[in-house]
Length: 450
Figure 1: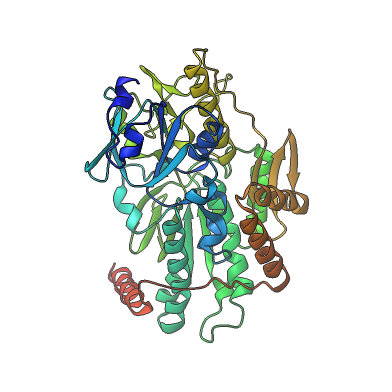
Figure 2 (figure 1 turned 180 degrees about the vertical axis):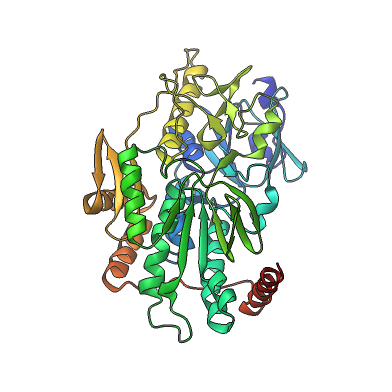
């Protein structure tokens, strides 16, 4: 038994007497789950720790936010996924800090300490507000089910509040939706909102026309979808504009508050602002005490291990990795899956006394949907647009969803909505429309006074 594994795991005595090397995985996303599965028949004991009890298919979160899918349609219990893997234990807890030298982590405000022989940090990322954390209260991002449900609540409440107000300026602000960030998340949100406003809400309100809602997509760079070829970025922008979305590139947001946003010096009154402009590594990465990049991600070695700590690996959005040509590996689900699988394989190599292998990203393609019948894709060097790209997007996302139930459910939901334009998941919880109206009227008065 190694010194690290000699320390008892305080949450269970059974693990303390198990002589197998202990692999602790932090995070049950794509990377963490792939690492656990890669070690399924390895002579190790695995503990996977996550602050939630579910694995989430993040690429479809925006469809929860726009009332297309239920949260359960894109999530699966982690325990269920690993139920047949005898060497894996799942713990629902919050990891507070990592002590790389002592080889242990603390959980739940330091009340529990867990020792490890190998650590896989796959804690993901959160939103980056470029030094303005106060913006998050007014512009939620999209990383978790809680984020998606908050977006859905704000989105649907805006129409309810607009139906009740009589002030034209206040109504306009309530029916203005601003999306900051022209990456895939921002583009897909911007493309979906007009579908809801023009079709799903058609004839449901008496004092407002939901189709009159204004959607603005603000991108700080010269083009949207910067990871895609320029030709596909241009096509995506044309498709969005055909849907009525106003796309502004080279547009820098300098303020986000309760009244809207300020971009390129212009005040845009809006009560619903969504954030998709950047990511930063999970704060847990900072506790490793190793160099991080500007986005708070760990600068890992070629084999995804942490410099100076060959027994600690990082995978997924918490790691910054470059391809042999110097280009960054994108923060997408396929990359996280490949990283997790390599980490599991490298732990096996380490246990066998063999050299670890470097990470080489295999880009299977890039996809982004822009509403009904519209999408852009780059698959195997080929560029696809329009209906063909949209069908490809549907097929790929169904294929990569975890669980047969979710695949069938999502496919049925999509088929029903394609035929009827209906959105059945329009539950509003939390803040009442009365509270939103009070905030809206206060903002309207501030604008009039200015």
